[in-house]
Image (cartoon, rainbow, N blue to C red):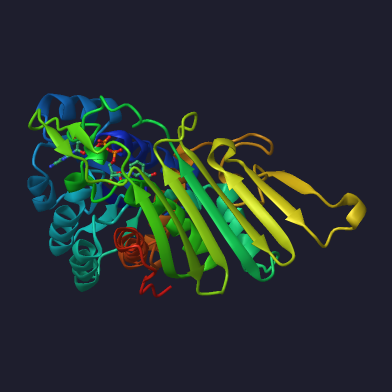
Length: 384
Ligand SMILES: NC(=O)c1ccc[n+]([C@@H]2O[C@H](COP(=O)([O-])OP(=O)(O)OC[C@H]3O[C@@H](n4cnc5c(N)ncnc54)[C@H](O)[C@@H]3O)[C@@H](O)[C@H]2O)c1
C-alpha cells in the first residue's frame, strides 16, 4: 500500500481548463513519483447533471456535484480547483478558503483588483496552500529563459516585448455570453484580451523581468454590439477586443505588449523577446519547445541566433519525460504546475504564483484598462 498522503481534489468546471487540469491530476503521479502527495479525483462539479456525470465517468472522478457550495461543504475534499469563468472565481475561492480547503484557481484571479483583494485576504487568513494557473511559466523553454536571466546571461535588460494574438472573434455574427462565449461578455469575463491574454504576458514578464511600474495603453472594441445569448437582444459589447500598451519596468527597461482577437491567421500566438546588454532571447508558443538565444559575447564570426531545442534531461522538467530530442506540449505545463504545487506541500513552501502574486498581475491589467479609458499614464502600484 502507498505511504503517500492523499490530496483529495474537487474540481469546479469541466470545460477547456477542467480537461487540462484533470489530465494533469491523472499524469502527475506517474511522472513525478518522488512526490509524497498523491492526487485523488474525489469529485467534479458543474450545473448540468447529465454532463457532469458523464465527465466524472470519463475522467475517473469518484463522484459529482451540481452545486459548487455542496462541493466546498464536503469534508472528504482537501483542495478546490477552480476552472469556471472569471466571474465565479471570487465567490468559490473565498468560500473554499473559509472552509479550510486549499485553493487552486485559474487565471485571471478575478475581474478586478477590488474583487481579487478579499480573495487574497481570505486565503491568507485561512493560511491555506494556494496557486493560480499562470501555466506558461512552466513550459520548459520559458523556465530555461528564467534561468538564463537569473544567471545574468543577458546582463542589463533594455527591452521586453510580448504579443498574444488570436483571430476567433472577427465575425460580427458571433454572440456574446453563455457557454463558450462568456469571454465576450464583460460581466462574466471582466475584460477582453487584457484579462484573458495579456494577463498571461504580464505574469510571465514580471516573473522574468521584475515589476511593471507604470503603463500607457490603448484598447479598441471593433464590434460594438453583439446579440447576447441570454436575452437574444443586441447589446453593447463591454470588452476590449484589442489592447496595446507600453510600460516601464522597475529595472529601467521598456516593455511593449500587444494582444488582439482580430489578427487573422493567428490562433494563439504568444511570443516574447527580451533584449539585454549581452544577449537576447525569444520564445513563441507555436514552437514551444524552442528557446531562441543570441549571445553577443560569441566570437563575431560565429555570432548568430541559436535555436535551443529544450528537450534534454538537464533542462527544466525534461528529466521527467522522454529521451533527449523528443518534445512535450502545452498540456505538460499544467502537469508541471500541479507537480510544483504538490512539491510545495511536501516541503511546506508556497507555490508561485500565489493569490497574492496573481493580484499584482491584476493590478497591471487594471492600470492598463484605466490608462486606455482615460488616455493617460497610470502607476500600477505593483510590488514585485
Ligand atoms: N491557464 C490558461 O492558459 C487558461 C486557458 C483557458 C482558460 N483559462 C481560464 O480558465 C477559466 C475557465 O475557462 P475555460 O476556457 O475552461 O472555460 P469553459 O467555458 O470551457 O469552461 C467553464 C466551465 O465552468 C462551468 N461553470 C460555469 N459556471 C458554473 C457554476 N456556477 N458552477 C459550476 N460550474 C460552472 C461551465 O459549465 C464549464 O464547464 C477561466 O477563468 C479562464 O480565464 C486559463
